[in-house]
Length: 318
Picture 1 (cartoon, helix red, strand yellow):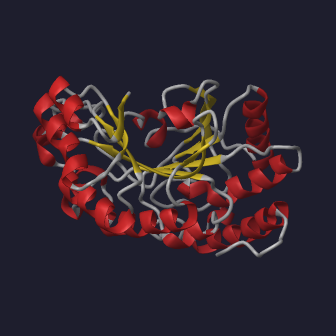
Picture 2: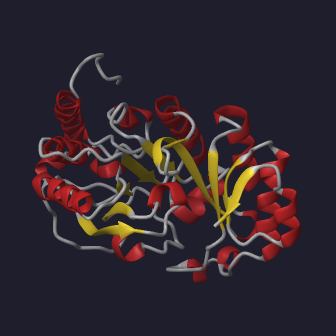
Picture 3: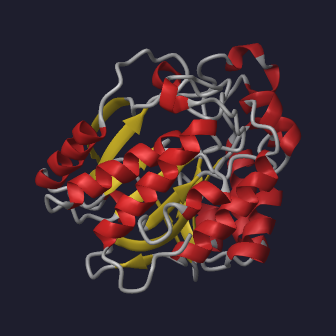
């Protein structure tokens, strides 16, 4: 769904919001396509109803440097999730929350408040199941001067159809690419078909946004940044992910390689992931930048030896 040439953004948002709300009659926003009528309060796998539910919002200084900048990213954390990771660090609100629903008007007010605080952008965290409501809120906020870049911060378990509603609206896509095989995606995140779904989603995100573009201050204006969390014992199939990105997205795409996994929530019940990753596992994953010719991104705590190997690339330590 592409923006009509010359059409005002407010008109696009209003049109997209109305179209997206229609999809709630037989909900197909995420790959599960539960088919429930959320307009009548029915709930499917994610347990989201008609109205959005916000767990918290604030100026976030812990994202990648071009996202957080110096004034913080205006993060809005939505409850519920289309995946159920057994090791989820945010399980309190992603899988167990009973927070009260809010309105599109209130969500628009949150966006304006974050703008007034000086945030660089509006960072929508786990937003896929609330896309219609977000579009309505953006329309309402836009009428009151909300003009910050929009960051779509997602698990990567997105449909091309839902992403189509966001074409020309989202400025920066910030997806995870969590698994390079479907077996582990099902076992540890209850996400059937994750890898193929995520591959299609990332191709669409890249089509819409392209490689990362920064302003004069190094803040993200537009583009795709892919996150990958290294998991113990090769569970994430990181090699397959880097191979796909290099061959089918871009060798210049920015990748944020994360090392902060710890066995949260129910991970203790799964011996394969019931520990932190080792330095060796992270070093092996970091080496894949070089193996597949990927030249942009961020790494956490590389060894001195790996630091030297990364010289000549734009892969930075954070």
